[in-house]
Image 1 (cartoon, rainbow, N blue to C red):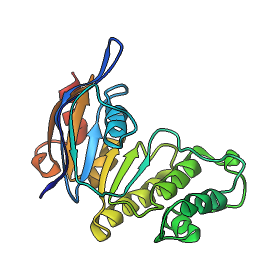
Image 2: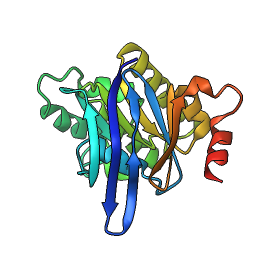
Image 3: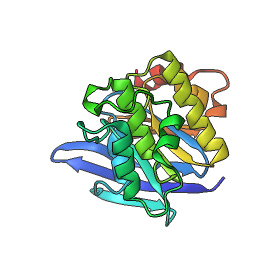
Image 4: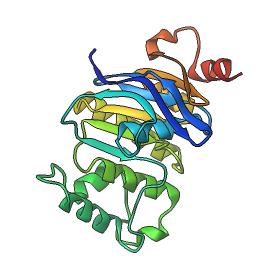
Length: 222
């Protein structure tokens, strides 16, 4: 499996704080790569650097050229007084030759009651809308930072099935961070463990035959 992203000794420093410290990571094309770590481990910073939203202090990022990317990082950027449908229509108007329409995207993420203003949505509904916005350009590479936040069990299952479908049918490479390790274990093909900005290790998920992600997490972070 070829790597769609490789970093070498990637560093990001904010004054005296090392958010990332010599991170060399390998994201295989067509994988679902799970980023695991506690709060402040550097997961969101790494995603922002890979998306080009921030500049590394030092190190290299090697990524395939011409990739379409989509992302949901932290709180989705939404127009609060607009409906979900209007938010999506605006996003689609910015894309050349979009492959989806707003209704298809809303159905894809299972978002209902889409006419009321987004400011009245629950956290789970905003997460669904954020995911729909991230999928608007039919990305080759999708970044999902805690996409299960605020979802009920049925919503978690629906998003899990959507992630698997995008990966298996659209061949979308997905980089996902989540604290819900048993859910991450159901979808990830590869995992990387970050602690205090350091990549402790990475491996294919099938290497975890005699343990679980939860046990590996606690072993790594003791």
